[in-house]
Image (cartoon, rainbow, N blue to C red):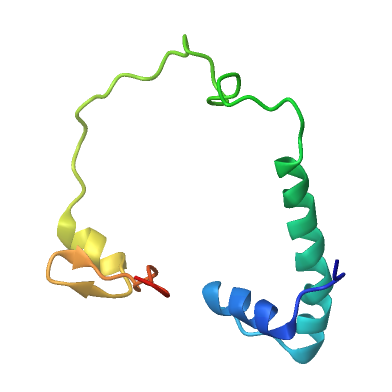
Length: 102
């Protein structure tokens, strides 16, 4: 089993996060990201895990707040605070990619 990710894998993660990295940061993250992935993989190896037992982190009798109608935000004021907008909608970057086979 390898002890670090490839530079390409680190650059791929950085690209997904939309951050740029120096060569020194790439070297550091090759090891650190691999350690994180190894720790996450340990969860898959937990024995006795049962989906019926761990459905959610709250109990069934949890009381939720009531939905109440409140004052609506002024769309014009909201759009003034948005970096980009199109008509009455806030424009955000596309983050979903069909990828291979899509």
